[in-house]
Length: 270
Image (tube, rainbow, N blue to C red):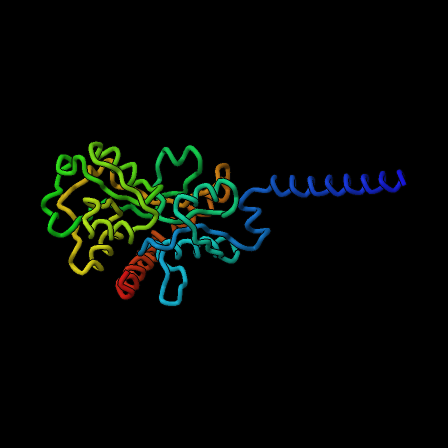
């Protein structure tokens, strides 16, 4: 009986060792090697940020960021899989390897670069303060917003911008921009800070209730460049992504994807 138990224990030990070797072999692979080995590129995004990423009438995730994701997958010769998740969960998902890339209008910042790596910048956007229409000419300076709540999407660079550019205002965060726009419309917060393209959409679909305030953020702190998010230490993968970015910017295809996304966004009333 003891021999049987010893044999079973030996088999279990050998199995664990083989699994360990397999796991270590996988962990030694670069992200680029894992992607090509799997035959698919898994991209994390948050599909409520038109025109960058949003759902069309058939619930497909589309937008100019998704065009970029598709082009990267083509460059790598693999299929594309898109995972829709909370924005503030994307960077942790990239860090853990749950997704291969994060493409969700991520602003390239030194703070984020401490925990992940960035591709080259593929788009830049100024920042808007969106307010109730009657307050367009009221909230024009940081002083006019003193003591008031100003909203941003949780986990975004806009939250940091509010804290630095509007230090005497109160930061108010929610997970989605439609909910933030509703808070502005209901008078619960003074305004929300958002990328210009998304702000234009919020205003256009507000039935005249919202407007871009006559407020200008300092361009040195509020002209945000967008990059792809990559797990640290994958220079070979970043090099492939940068090839795609250079191509789609130089041949005009990213601009076309942007224009198409804006047109669809307006058609859907987003």
